[in-house]
Image (cartoon, rainbow, N blue to C red; front, side, top):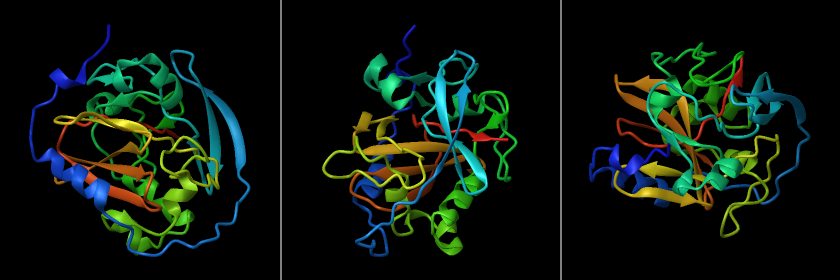
Length: 241
């Protein structure tokens, strides 16, 4: 059965403000012209409970999935392929509400989060702190990592894949994270951003119900950090326990 996000969300016009900030905000520092390619350690092959296969990669002291999660098995919330097209799930993974991601578990600010959610056994949904750990390893300052909006310098470029981002927005994929622009699902705008935007949930929430996430964009070199109390559809990466 296909799940349609558009009839599940409350229509709240102020969600458009999120996209205005995301689309037109800027990194606060200049990006170096020359980025040095760094070798990364391709690690294991991971299987989920549907038999989907994922590459993983070691970045610093963390082992991340090198692809977006694509399981359709979850007890709570909703998930779907961008545009209701299965081929987009194959390429970009599924887009999930936070309820689907957490799978009935409470938010976590810890590092590691301790929240398996919908990740395969032995893996978990990364917390905001685990994303910050990744960002600092990539060269972001700790103060920048704790700020919101577009932060850092070229850390987003280092995460983005070397192809697939429109308008010359590809990255250098220095560490094998291979972030793809799988788009998002928004209450008012619906499907948006395929080829230009990628968004990823964390397991963390602030002020009770504001779920923390990360975004990358084709025309930005840094990483966007914010939180939402809206029911968005984002991608998911898991981290090894």
